[in-house]
Amino acid sequence: VSVLYWAMSEARRCTRVDYAEAPGTAPLDQPTANGAMVAVEKKAFVFGGFSNGGSHGQIAEYDLATKQWTKRPGLPAARSEGTAVVLGAHVVLFGGWNDHDALAATIVTKASSLAEGKTDAWQPLAAAAAALRSNDDDGAPEAPATVLEPPPRRMHAMCVYQPTAEGAAPCAYVFGGFSGTSRLNDLWRLDGETLTWTHVECQGFPPSPRDSAALAANPEQGQLLVFGGYATSRVNELFTLDVETGTWARQPTSMPPAARFGTFAVVSGDQLVAGMGQDARGASAGVFALKLSTWKWALLPVEGDELEARINFAWCTSDGGKRLIIAGGSTDVRQCTAVQEIELEKVEAAAGSPAGKKK
Image (cartoon, rainbow, N blue to C red; front, side, top):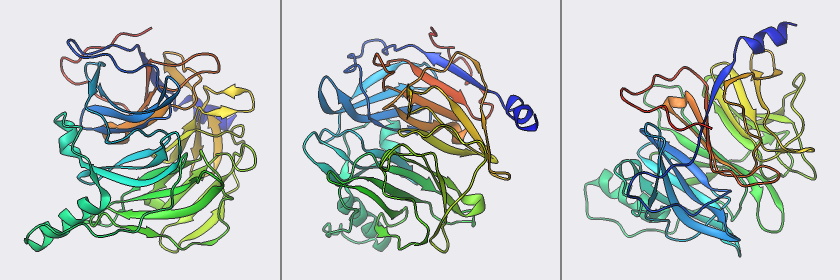
């Protein structure tokens, strides 16, 4: 009863927004799945994905105020099943699939460029890191050096970790994935100041090799959290990593969701919110909350529009982590074009912004 009461008191609002193009813009390649997504200021961007039988390099801009899509100049090359994060002043896109090979390439652009609609200013990681070093030295631009990057992979997990210490720079972590021949359970860190990758040597009891897991940061407790994924089958395990010591541990939880892969996960306040993806019955609409003080799971009630079961979707948070944006993907029987926005915390609407077309 106490768990049910806690869940009912934590309901979140869901808003479904049907696909609409910004006036005078070209239509997007629809439908699409397995894209990577970030939010910069009041816009969200979906990079690449899979549609019409192949991977593509489309960049789709979603205006969080007008609820309209704009097709922007695309990526340097097609990729699906990659990941993207906003890391300090940069947007970083890593890994993925080009219909032939798993990718190791990391490409970088400035977040300010995306906010201005300039989506074609991508650089290889080595060039972006060299530019940072040149700025620090106030000298001539350095020639890009060979950089260490994680091995090729797709269907991996990635998140940003912002240390709580004052003035500390953020970093990004990548976990697991599929190399093209085998599943992985290695961990890599990308420094937000230098844009350099480091392989994290870990100890303890790590997750087994898996793809399509979810990775979330909990800097208040100095942890990373890994939930779900596909190992030799679907899993619903939760693992924690102590960031300071590099120690993995399997965390027992009460009443976990059904085993699933392709889920999202994000820490919001004192809970881990995770859901959707594919369980044994197919595409799932379930969203769940794990109370981090008690390690108890509960179904998270949603107000407003009904959640749509979805797999292979792109997702990100916006408004400082207060809102979850889900785009693309498919149900078990059809492709999805509507956006689902879920409030993780109360979001104040911008003055004069439309409610958006809902179905």
